[in-house]
Length: 136
Image (cartoon, rainbow, N blue to C red; front, side):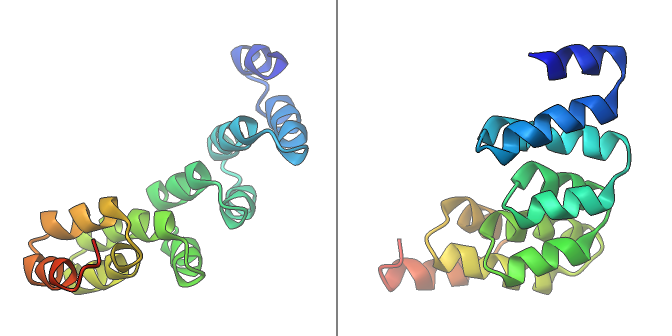
């Protein structure tokens, strides 16, 4: 793929252009790969735009850079993947209750990974209540 050759040459702009064009015509793999050159060149606006389309790789790069506002906006819009990515940084800075609250939405919607994250945080009462209610 030409994007790979451009990456080897260090042409982040050219690589991003090709991947963006492929993503625009529906190539999901290219859309996910587009996040890497955007992150490498520090294009936070580009990463936010990609995260807004549901690109979980872009959301992950935003989380790695501490852009919790973008993840919070995606979480508020119902993006369970963003919620799971937001919970980690919140926990690291000591916001354990907020991290657990954010995970409850996706867990209630049947997201087993969010439920596992709650279990790892010791939120067994919530998990038991959901299991008793037949949520899982």
